[in-house]
Length: 110
Image (tube, rainbow, N blue to C red; front, top):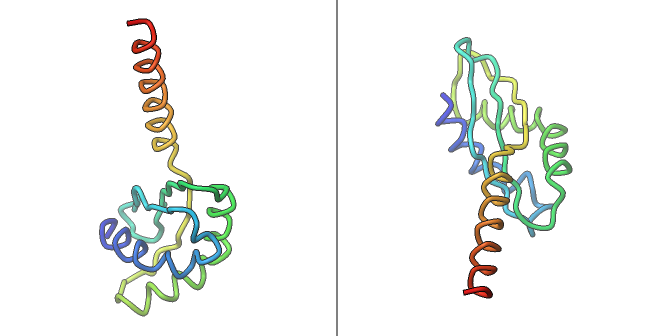
């Protein structure tokens, strides 16, 4: 279920995020509990858009997104969607920046 939701939502999101087209929004993970009644969708946002604005926009559009999901698949339960920002992408970006800065400093001293 989680992989189906990730793939399907990835296909649906561009049309839901037209206002944020200058930014790249990626679904990094979908977590679905055993009862399949909800799904936590983790997002990464790269570019000029404020990630919290993107998340908030998707939260406001949850009803329409769920409706589109229901038209694409027959679920016993159409899961309630909860969008959250994936902080692991920020950590990777920060670590990459630190490594690049360190390598640049080594080039200066070496």
